Length: 302
Image (cartoon, rainbow, N blue to C red; front, top):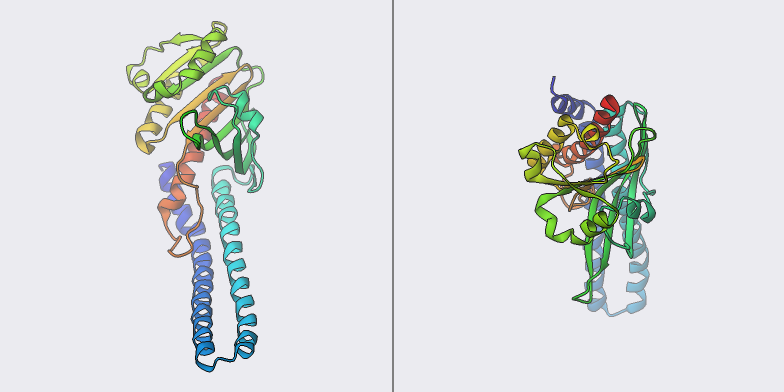
């Protein structure tokens, strides 16, 4: 059975019931909030009618405190929604072998060490840290957002926003390899200049389909054809076609880094509309599955 079909069945049996439970909580909180705001509005109009400020104030204080409590509950709903769903997805993928921490992240040092994006990352934030081991390869990943100051306008521009992964390739690689989207070559000139200064040269892998989507730079001592096998090339091309997201990869000695762009905040719940949506969960699952399938491929063949 196709893995996505298996996930759909798992979603129906395991994730959907949890989403429905959270949905009932969301609706109850919104219903109570709307009623409280309606009552608070009525009290304000009553104050204008009876013109006794002290009485109105005594009526408003407890209600205002209750509304503040409801907003706290809504915020609590938002920050607990994602961990519950992510842990269920990880249980399906790895049967509990991965660890998830919503408040932890990879570091700005990890981002710079990848050398993919030539930036000092003056504005860096991250969340949703996942770590574990696939075969012999240990990895960690998180969502990150990186910005830097524009040289033209007085604002911060995006350098990268998406999922970033770091994996330990001890004994499996050497040198440096960079895989970048061909379409964004004009925006990566600083990175490419940095690669060439370090001795990296353009590499052709012989696959026309792959080279239409990606460009590869590598140092002369790197095992390019072993690490970027035909299987890995096909995984990257298929995912890019299907999901319309850009993928960046670097191998720096014994470390691998993978960056997958994602403009949305993955699995951030809605407050004023339903979150019971397979596509909402599917997008996050497929991003994880891509990263894990790349690691699996390297572990199996290298």
